[in-house]
Length: 265
Image 1: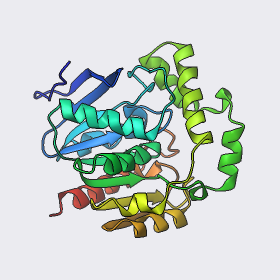
Image 2: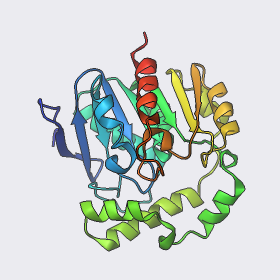
Image 3: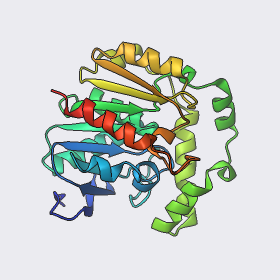
Image 4: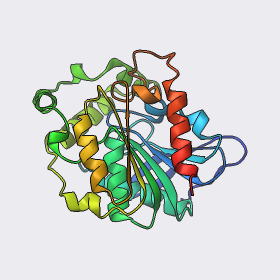
């Protein structure tokens, strides 16, 4: 099945991609900007506050990855490499030869793998609250992940998933696959990041689960790296669903910063 580009109204469609039925939305017009959500999340939980503003200047292609949201699962564990290949295949079906890529949390790891495995695709990268080594997060995070149970999954993510797909077994399956991917994560070599030649903006909150020191380390590895450390927690700077202050104006400033980075020559 060939995927479709948008008409004047937002597109909400599926594409057959590497054995899964992959959901995507397209909003706005302009140079393509791919949005990649984080673990346990959906387009809406991560990007609802910033997507309309981003669509004012970009053709936003927002995806949902294997086992997440509207997208089906495959008989294989999740991996950042496979997610990157799935995004690349979708873009190929859309006949998009180059795009800017914005990945949040685990979506940033997928964005990095997209740049590593399909270097011709990303023009510019935004890596928001992402990591490449286990030391990028406090040891307590990994201790908690080793003991993580379904009860620990944020309720807002559970509710959003069940609103889309009212199948508790599928929700539990997604949780287990997300947990396994994190529990088995192995550090990436610095050479992975040094090989990414696209201009790359690294973003982190000063109270993020990602250590600000790790974000500094990351941005210095990218040949064309830039860095933004913003007051706030994991994704609060973009109005992510877990944000405590849903009336904050910081997401508007974040979009302005993103636009300036992406629209610069």
